[in-house]
Amino acid sequence: MDHYTRIQLAIEYLEQHLQDDFNIRETSAAASFSAFHFQPTLE
Image (cartoon, rainbow, N blue to C red; front, side, top):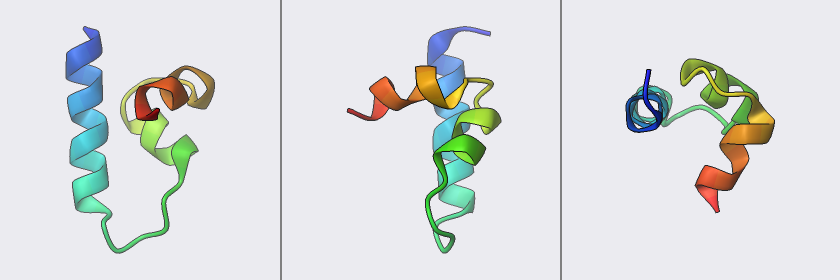
């Protein structure tokens, strides 16, 4: 799975959980990233 596809999965996860508190671990897991590797994409 390429990087752009994984980012799209994270976006879809966030859209489905807009009412929830943000959780980087759950969001990164939805995109098959570790929280450590996902965090720089948010900066």
